[in-house]
Length: 118
Image 1: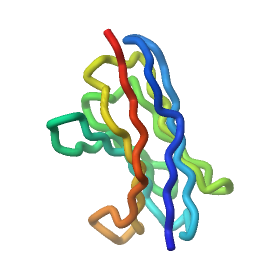
Image 2 (image 1 turned 90 degrees about the vertical axis):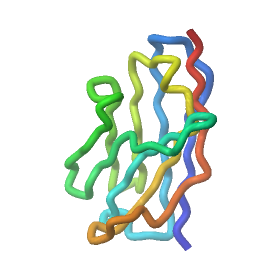
Image 3 (image 1 turned 60 degrees about the horizontal axis):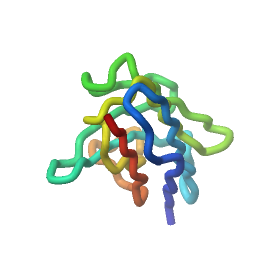
């Protein structure tokens, strides 16, 4: 059974940096596209970033230039480095995985809270 476990959330001030990590198990990691999504209170879940098995990346416009997604296929981990954080980045951040030939993400972590104070 695939499992994704996030870590690294917390409370920071605007302008600070924070790094999230997601450890994957129970799947052939290198076959999966990994993504980060977030959900703020009262809002729908939104895409943040994704990284394909070969290393190509995609970002939401709202985080482009501030966030960096990376993966380590040897360690089965995907990271999200978040710089220049803003209060509007406050949300529960979740890691997700989908096989390269799937449209929808298949597996989700439980999420980790990121709170950015002004």
